[in-house]
Image (tube, rainbow, N blue to C red; front, side, top):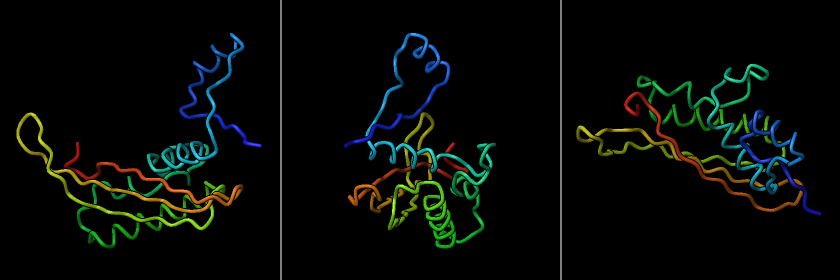
Length: 146
């Protein structure tokens, strides 16, 4: 039996209006739910969510850090992500996190702009079904990315 999960984002005003009309909030599969939860975890800084200050990851703590070596920064972020996933996404087991951090030159209205991109690959096993799971995401970070 396949379970359904509520999809993100969960907009309370929208949900209330739909509930009053007896409509349900959109649902998604287990895989999509895990992917959406991982994306939320990756895009949340520690302390940003008042109910759970440990929810999030350290990507955003290292956003403007130009003093620490790139290798050390990469390993700090990787370890933080691994710990956060193990703590907050218990539907995954055997979790592995891989990171690639690179500089990219992108054109903008005034010429070329240098941005730092972090590419994240998360693999593991879905505990409920013992299926292999993979998720990829990327973000621009760093002081020159704004």
